[in-house]
Image 1: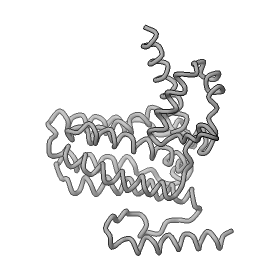
Image 2 (image 1 turned 60 degrees about the vertical axis):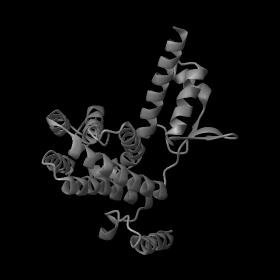
Image 3 (image 1 turned 30 degrees about the vertical axis):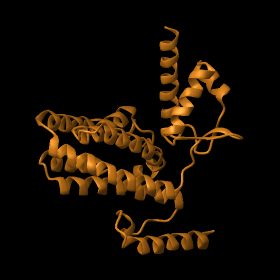
Image 4 (image 1 turned 180 degrees about the horizontal axis):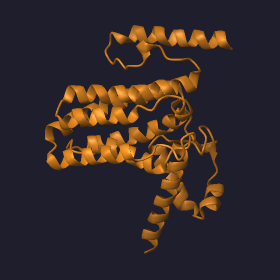
Length: 258
């Protein structure tokens, strides 16, 4: 009984910390004082430490022998790394799901997309605080896309990368609020291509969807509006020189602005 209670408290601490890190309530680089968290949550040392170790394994928290636990910082390099990994892993998951998925899977994708489209994204029209119901509907839609891939590992990798990108997406919420919201249309298009079993189109639309969010985030991180050529990830070896030149351009722009 005591073991079950401890496990339940560790799960509660994990979920609360995960949520606060994802929505930037806990700022990137912020030190996580275990005793302060225990007092705030009303949970003991062992469950909180277990939750922090779990988050450390997911790269949302860093652990340093001298400094203790702190929220993982945000960076342009990490953002690009997450984007590449997310495109690669989700492509495998989506292609395999389209190949293996049955009618029940199709229905779940359609229902998840419909629920997402009917859920308000923000609490109020001019509020930048997102609706938690929309956040969950958004997560569920992306989870449903790859849910028939036949690999628990791929599904879990996709989920982990979704949460890793969530912190960056919250950084872009101010920029997104100032722009027309086309995400419902994007989700509809991804859903249609998926249930139509058009793998190439579904993957193209999904990667484009990921890239648009990253462009907004990069603008917030660097203050440099992204060039059109930067809005898509090119994973081929031939793209390395181009990416290096783009990085040099951004660095030059930041130096001239400072």
